[in-house]
Each structure stands twice: as structure tokens, then as C-alpha cells.
Length: 334
Ligand code: HEC
Ligand code: HEC
Image 1 (tube, rainbow, N blue to C red):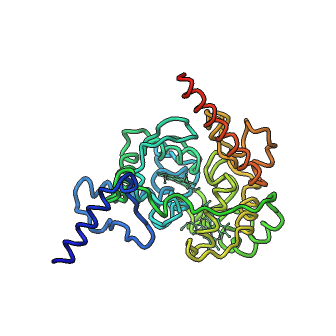
Image 2 (image 1 turned 120 degrees about the horizontal axis):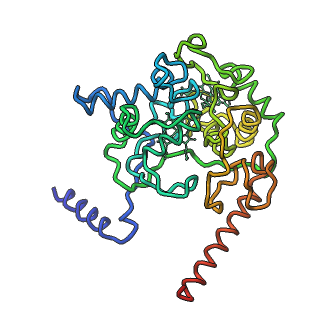
Image 3 (image 1 turned 90 degrees about the horizontal axis):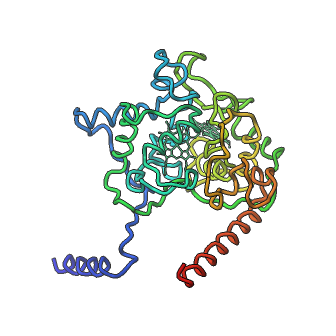
């Protein structure tokens, strides 16, 4: 009892000690995901289970080959979990655990505050190369409810270790597409196919999706997708591919992940229209967003394939200059 009281006292002290304690942290590494199986058979449980189904078998419910043409919202036969692996719970594979706790959030791509629903529709129009789900549709409610369920016990505003993708350092050179092709042939082609076409579960038209999803070509993510940015793809691939890999034991080196990402993204895929409207604030456009306008004066090829360290340096300098201008204005009371 005495020890417990001591621990409690220390815990309270820590809790009271200034700004550091105000931010809660949570790690997804080794943390068990909430179990869908334990949910009761009520409205909430039903919607969570439907949300999980929609994520794992997206193609069978809202894909381009479903019978009911009104339900064809996705433009390709991927599943959300083609990227958001392990039912969207895998650390560093853009897990949804905690997403309800960090949205609404500012998003540079839209330069405004964005809700979970808008984020879901972001992936619908880009990763899934389709059209947005109506906000009042059962499908949108199911996605949001599944994400909400996965985010249980994550404090609002928490800093989450294992969120998004794990950082990695791009080499200071242009991606070597020939080297990337060799990596692809040795490490990826057995599953993703000679022409990046993947391997279907069944036959075209049957809405049964893929055993191994395509990584380029007409049934892949479009040019506006996050995965179409080489640094994003590099981070995802390095820590999640070949299938079975996780962040703790990557198989590819940074160089190999960078080159194979460049190789995949050099291939054709569906075009997203009006990309110039993305990142309207411009100054916060990611350096690997490979579509115009390019505000830093660097060539399009460099934004697509690198070398990135000089672009990162330019972006840092521009950010510092912005801060400086802001401070000067504040000092003048403007
Ligand atoms: C081709 C890969 C891919 C597919 C398929 C995909 N996404 Fe995403 N998704 C991403 C990437 C990449 C991000 C951005 C991660 C980042 O910003 O660091 C993301 C982010 C998200 C986020 C925000 C996560 C966060 O941590 O802020 C949500 C929610 C989301 N996607 C939902 C969906 C839904 C729902 C589907 C299916 C309808 C889907 N995604 C399909 C690649 C994909
Ligand atoms: C053993 C089979 C296998 C190998 C080898 C493999 N993958 Fe995958 N890959 C998958 C599967 C399966 C998925 C879907 C995610 C899941 O089910 O966990 C996937 C998903 C992906 C995705 C995101 C979804 C999409 O279709 O765009 C990318 C990108 C990708 N793999 C790239 C690679 C690269 C690059 C390599 C080689 C370094 C590779 N993969 C090797 C099986 C494989």
C-alpha cells in the first residue's frame, strides 16, 4: 500500500509538472487492437463490423464492378487495407487507430481544417481513384464508426507513435530507375506481376478484388494519391514490403526503397484532374508533390525523382524567412 501511495504521489507530481505533462503520448507498437468480435449485436456493433468489411473488401461493396451501378464509388478494385494493412491497425502503415483523436485537423492539401469524413473522401478520390461518398450514406457512417471504434482509449490530441509512416532518409541523388527495376524484379514482381498488374482473386468483372494488388496501370491509385509521392511510397515500402515486413525489421535499404518507389511511380496510372488546386497555400506543398505549380523554381523532374535534400533545405530556408517576416510584423504591431 505504502509503495502504491508513493507511486500515486509521483504520478500526481508528474501530472502537475508543467507543459510536458499536458500532451499525452501513446504507442501503437505491440498494443493490441480493439477486437471487433467482442462487440454486441446492436446498431453500433453492426456499423463497426460493416465498416471493417468495407475496408477489407472495398471492391465487393463500392468497387467499380459491383452489380448496383449507383454503388460504384471507388474507381479501382483495391481495398482500403491494400495500404492500411492489417485491418488498418498496423503501425507505420497509416493506421486508423487514433485518427478520431487527431481529427478535425489542419490539412495542407486543402489549406483548411478537415474532418474524418473529408479525409476518407480524400482517399476515395485519390487512392481509390473514385468519387466521394455522400456524408449521410451508410458507407460513410460505417467508415467513420469503424475508425472511431479503432480509436477507443486514445486521448483526444494524443501524440501517437506508429502513426502515418516511419521516416527514412532519401539519398542525396536522383532515383536510379534501372536499379529500382532490378529491386522490383527480385523482391516485388513475384506478387505484384511483371507489369505491376497484381494478381486477381477471380476474373475481371467479378468484383472480387486482388490477392496481390496492382502497383501501377489502370486499376491502381491515381496521380493525386499520397502513395504517388516518392518519399511517401519510399517510407511505406521500406517498412512494409515485401509483404510480411514491419518497421522493426526492414528488408530493403533506404537506397533500394527509394529506387523501387521511383521505378513504380515512373509507370502510368490514372490521372487525377485539377491537381494544381491542391495545396492552395503553396508554401506548405510537400517537396515530393510532383505536379505544378512549383513555387521553389526547381524543375519538375527533381520534385518527382530527387535529389531531395537540396529541396528540403530550400523549404527550411523559406519557412525560416516566413517566420522572420511574421515576427517583424508582430514587433511592429501590425
Ligand atoms: C494506395 C494506398 C491507399 C489506399 C488504397 C487507401 N489509402 Fe488512405 N491513406 C493512404 C496514405 C498514403 C495516407 C496518408 C498518410 C500520411 O499522410 O502520412 C492515407 C491516409 C488516410 C487516412 C488518415 C490517416 C491519418 O493518420 O491521418 C484515412 C482516415 C484514410 N486514409 C482512409 C482511407 C479509406 C477509408 C480508404 C478506402 C476507402 C483508404 N484510405 C484507401 C493510402 C491509401
Ligand atoms: C509476398 C507477396 C508480396 C511481395 C513480394 C511484395 N508485396 Fe507489396 N503487397 C502485397 C500485398 C498482399 C499487399 C496488400 C496489403 C496487405 O494485404 O497487407 C501489398 C501492397 C503493396 C502496396 C500498396 C498497395 C498498392 O497496390 O499500391 C505497394 C505500393 C506495394 N505493395 C509495393 C511493393 C514493393 C515495392 C515490393 C517489393 C519491394 C512489394 N510490394 C513486394 C504483397 C506483396
